[in-house]
Image 1 (spheres, helix red, strand yellow):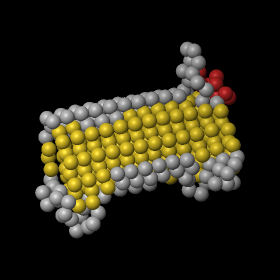
Image 2: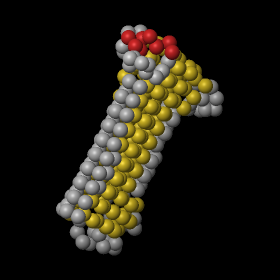
Image 3: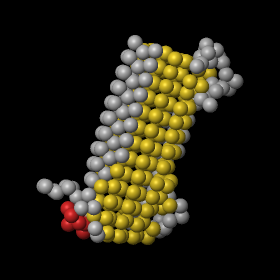
Length: 269
């Protein structure tokens, strides 16, 4: 299948990058010290081959500039599939919109805003994260700012968040690693797990899903836990949760609500 390549020189601040691809794949890579923007478009089927020259690849120079890659919408009885590969300088803000295309984001990006229906999203590193998905799964590494995710049935996994985290799902599981800021997660039947949380507030709400929180040591704790038919399992002693224990002055409030899900409190290693 044919490939179309476009390259642009970057002279000012890190430009914004926007990629819109309905089906196929998206691979975007941020490179430290890069001074160019490059885009490769590969047609993955005959329908895409016919539209290859109609794909918008436009760089608007400015301070900062903006790169737009937009695949034409599907036509009647036509489902074009494109592989979009782009390389940009590190720190660029990124916007990605797909339907079923899988997206891989490599390298250190700025704020990332992604919307997808069923495409999976893999992210290595970004400043801020905002994701909306129906059934696509999200797996992210390091977010140096805040993270906000809305999902229907897609699973959510974020390893490290330096800021606050909010997540809402229907049936998707939410797995968070280390979170330095506040956490707010709401789900119906999905399970929720927070691997390590420090001072601030954690608020988890489920209907039938289980919820687990691991608490960093040396905190004053306030606990507010309620479940109707689920079980409560805690590794913390009463001294941990009396609001006075702990060598440090930082405080953490943990609020967990569930109808039939189990609630678990753990000590973070």
